[in-house]
Amino acid sequence: MWTPDTRLARHFTVRELDPEGAADGKHRDRLRELAGVLEIIRERTARPVIVTPSGGYQPPAEQQSRPWPPRKPTSQHRQARAADIIVRGMSSVDLANLVIALCRGGVLDAVGGVGCYRGFVHVDTRPRRSRQTLGYQLAMWAGDGIDLDRSAPRFSLG
Ligand SMILES: [Zn+2]
Image 1: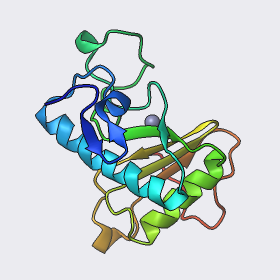
Image 2: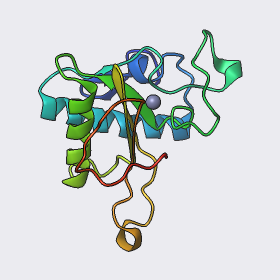
Image 3: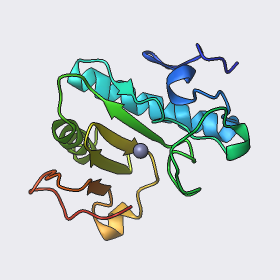
Image 4: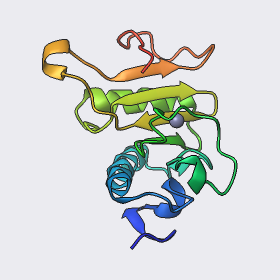
C-alpha cells in the first residue's frame, strides 16, 4: 500500500516525502529509511520536523504533476534519499549543527550528507564512503554566507 496517508514512520507519511506518490520499491525502502532519520531528529528536537513542499522525493519528469525545482538526476532527492526540513523555532544553522552532532555521535548512522541553507536544512542518506580507512566521510556544506560550524571538519561539496 502506498497512499498519501501511508505511514513511513510514526510521524511521517507518504504525503510528506513522496507527494506525487511516484516512488517504486527501491525508492519506497529509501523513503522509509529517511523517515526513520527524521523521526530521530524529531525526537531529539522534541518538535515537529516539517518537510518543505518540494523537499522530498522528486520523481522522474514524466511522473511529475507540478513544477519541481531543477535538480540534476544525481540529486539525492531524485534517489529518494533526501529531505529538506524545517524545525520551527530553530535556525537552519542550529538544526544543521544538531544533525551533524548526532551523526558524529553515532545516533544518525544512516545520514551521509547535511546541507545548511537559508530557511531549511538538507539531510540525505547517501552511503558514507569507507569510514574505516578514510575517516569521517559525512558530506557537509553550507549555502552562501552561512557560517555553519567552525569546529566541523572541512566542508566538502557532496
Ligand atoms: Zn535537499
